[in-house]
Length: 154
Image (cartoon, rainbow, N blue to C red):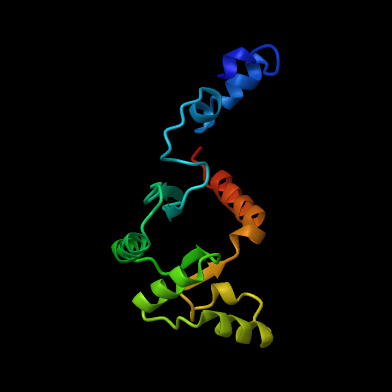
């Protein structure tokens, strides 16, 4: 049911007016799920404005097709750092091999951590950076939210 069923019951008209300012209003309140855009997007900063470079949803993606797609995006947009979900080590290794990076990244990470490097993710030695989305999702969403609000045009 859309928001009209809850109007003056669980939503006040002023709450709805505020919600209409959100880009997710149509999806969340009017049930217009297009399946192409979520509320957390890969973004790029140009002249103080966040711009979406590429957003796509894949249903049951083919491993090799995704490897080809990611590699193509890296080349097209001259990406310098890729933060990737660490839950798929075989994909990470394949991508690292394509980018001429050491595929044995777990040992390298362990070595840097043991040497006291606390911000190993930001170092120049690793272009493809595996991140545990499962354990760091709240931190990542908060960071994205902060950046979206800080850079919103007046």
